[in-house]
Structures are given as C-alpha cells and as structure tokens.
Image (cartoon, rainbow, N blue to C red; front, side, top):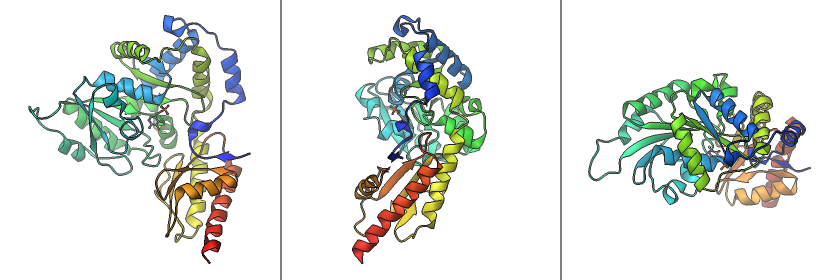
Length: 351
Ligand SMILES: *Cc1c(COP(=O)(O)O)cnc(C)c1O
C-alpha cells in the first residue's frame, strides 16, 4: 500500500466514522431540519465559545464567508504574506467579495504587534479603509507552526484597539490545542469569527465550520446559499465531522510524534543533500529542502512515489510531508528509508 504524506486531507473515513455516517438521522438542511447538522453546529459553537456556527463544504468557502462578514467591497483586510487565504484561495476575497488585501511579513506565518502597528494608518482619502485582521493558527506554509500565546494575544489586542475585527483561520486549530494543551476557547476568545476544518487532521471526508455571533452566522447562512453551498441531507457529512471531534482530536498527538520522528531521521541524513526547512516541528508538518546542484523537488517526489511514498513538492527544492491518521510509525520508517534510497541513487548517478 502506498503511504501518502502529501497532506492530512487524504485520510479516509475510519470504520467508526462510516458507521456514524450511515446511521445518522437526516433532514433537509437548507429547509433547516437536518438534526445531525444542527447538533454539529450547536456543539461547535459551544466548543469554540461562540453564539452560533455554520457547517460549510470547505475551508476555502469558510474563509470566503468570513471575508464577506468582515469587509464591504473596497475595504481592506490584513493578513500575513504566506497565509492560506492570500496564497491558496484564488484571490476569492477580490474575485467574489471585491475586497483588498494587504500583507504583513512574518516568520513562519507569525508576526508581532509592532509589525501590525506599522501597517496601520489614519483614515485618508487615498487609502482603502482597513477593517479586519486574519490570523492563521496553526500556520500551513509556516510549517504547521503555532503562535506563541502571549504574542498572539498582544496582536489581537492591538488589532482591537485599532478598530479591526478579527478572523481566525483555524483549519488546523485542534493541532495547536493538542500540541500546547491550551484549551480551544483560549485560542478563540479574541476573535469575532473562527473557521476550522474537519477534513484535515480530524479525518472527516468533507467539511468546515464557521463560528461567530448569531447575526453574523445568519448572514453567512444566506451568503453560503448564493455561493451554492446549501447542502440537503448534509447530516451524512455532519455525522462524520461530529464523530471526528469526539474521537480524532486527542490522537493528533500521535501525528505530531510521527512528524518529529520523520524530522529526526532527516536530521541524521547528510546535510549536503537534505536539510529541514524548519528545524522545529510544532505539529504534523515536516518541510525539507534538497541541497546541491540539479535538484528538483518534483523529480524527487516522482522517485519517492515509485517506492510507494507520496510527498508534495511545494517549491523548486522544497518538499512537504504531513502526518495523519492513515500513516503510522511504520509508514514513517518506510518513508525515511525511501528518502535515503532516493538520495543514494542520486549520489550514485553523480559518481
Ligand atoms: C486547507 C486549508 C484551508 C482551506 O480548506 P479547504 O477545505 O481545502 O478549502 C484554509 N486554511 C488553511 C490554513 C488550510 O490549511
């Protein structure tokens, strides 16, 4: 069986999850009477410490709805320069919502209050009005990095003092919760809206949640419909998400251990050929760079795939490996062996 480390989105429903899906009580969620969706939305609102929540087909749509809630057309939101909403969502904020974005530079997706303050200005005829700040935790392109909590609170406080509303892209927020042991509500309390994915490390096939105040979630429900995101017997999917939050949160610690194990193996390989991009492994992501002339992450991943290991090229020389519930410690050992084999093949070719 191939071991797929490309993303934590590749997970297949577990047996228990499938059972929950096939036995879920269903209705028509667009008409508002799917009990399983309602139960999920109530549970998530409570878990995230917000008044209400809305089940959404994807994290991308969830962020898109957040942009709609936080900014009118022509207004501007601030986010870190490598954030998912800016890099990986087709510029939906502009395409669909007519909203401008200005980016802040960060270190592994993380920045400080001074950086935020330096991006703010008095209202002025020349500038779009800046209305919102989006943060991402854990940070995907930052290597699954976790915001240091004090810095996170300071940035949120500074944003609020300056009249900005706050959205948390918490696609992998539960990874931060498990890795730090800090309760989820502490991570969400400063935010007007929070988005979280069930289809990443939590292992559900589809779905995200957007949480916030009653009024905003009501608006988001209308907007979700016009985007084509109204789903009928969505309880089939909500049941998977519900199962995930009941059974797949604590086990994220296992993914974090496996990511550290893979990183340990890479550290022991010759640094003239391969090097960790981020030495610290906060959660379930490992990024590494190939070193030396004529290296190509694309070719490297093709060669790995021939050995039954899939990883994702994310830059010309950069490869990403993500751990999740369908790759165990044995798969990690096999992956490390395969990486060594491909590196040795490369060395042999050059000799
Ligand atoms: C995956 C991801 C999203 C988008 O989720 P999809 O369900 O793939 O649309 C948003 N933000 C972050 C940080 C992500 O990693």
